[in-house]
Image (tube, rainbow, N blue to C red; front, side, top):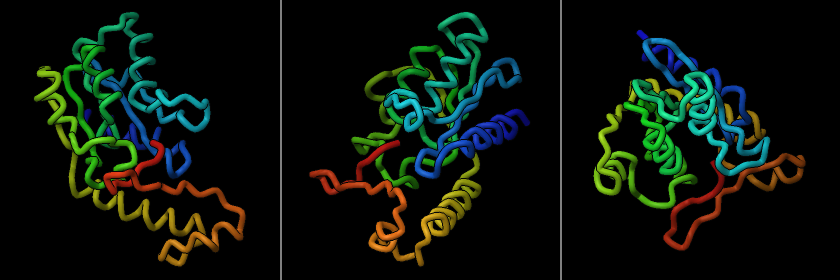
Length: 185
């Protein structure tokens, strides 16, 4: 039951952000949510202020230690390598995420390496990694796309010229040399 409550809390936190920054995280210890936060990258601005890092900072204050022994981190999206490394250094025992990197725009992943690959090959740590409810994450992705299209006033075909005329801010993701889309988290 705590899985569902923690993931719900993570999504509540994510919904406090602008559409292009909708990432949330909750941390659980002994069956209780001890910390939850959302992405602050665009508002601070601080490139390290991802939801997971912000929630880890909160949790460390709550337990009054930099080690989060016995804690599980719940994230709306698969954590980036920075966030996963931070969780590892904080001693988080388990990471649960809902939306995998394949279902995202690859804008925060500089490589094709998943956190599972990174954990197994680079870190050789013992953090357990789980994906939470695949069906729900696919529905979320579709609803977010529809919401973004509606918010930006698009007809669904990504007409950037109409947005520019309306004076709306757009997060356009450029392609890297390898042909992958890149941009901000």
